[in-house]
Amino acid sequence: MTTSTAGALRRPAGAARLLGLLSVILMAAGLSGCGAINRVPTLEERAKSAWSEVQNQYQRRADLIPNLVESVKGYAQQEKDVLVGVTEARAKASSVKVDGSTVSDPQTFKAFQDAQNQLSGALGRLLVTVERYPELKSNQNFLALQSQLEGTENRIAVARRDYINAVQAYNTEVRTIPGRWIAALLYPDAKPMETFTATPNADRPPSVKF
Image 1 (cartoon, one colour):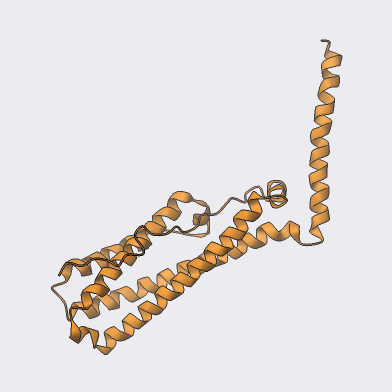
Image 2: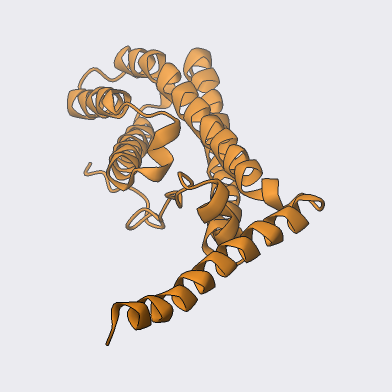
């Protein structure tokens, strides 16, 4: 095969790739009028905003724990192991450094979720243990802290649900056509985000030995 013949065979392939690129560009331009071209970054920002709210509610819980532990300690000092467990779990959860990039980093996201799950388990054991102390259960300071903690747990559940929904919408966009094409062409840094998974045995109450 001569050089001229090989070049003639390569030109159609190159022309086809160029035509394909031009088609994507024209498609993107056509979609810009209806807002589709901005859908990827819009959904990304929505998911990151939902993630910030998750972090905010977990921090709210962490801020309540020291006072809760002190309140219980005043009535149930013998529950040292349970109190230490909560304190250590809080410290571990707080040590996992997270930011906006965490949502696309599987290892960091898993470490964050695992640490928060451990803290949830430790708090569950603490609250079950409290059932043995009627005086503590009637203490106004403890009741106020317990109420705040329950409210925060509800907010965490709502924040996680909103985040999961936002990530589902974003991930679907960057994995399906035409969003996948638009992301590849205009937002090459756009990556699928991580989401929360169910905690093992989450439907079972924590066990406490009396």
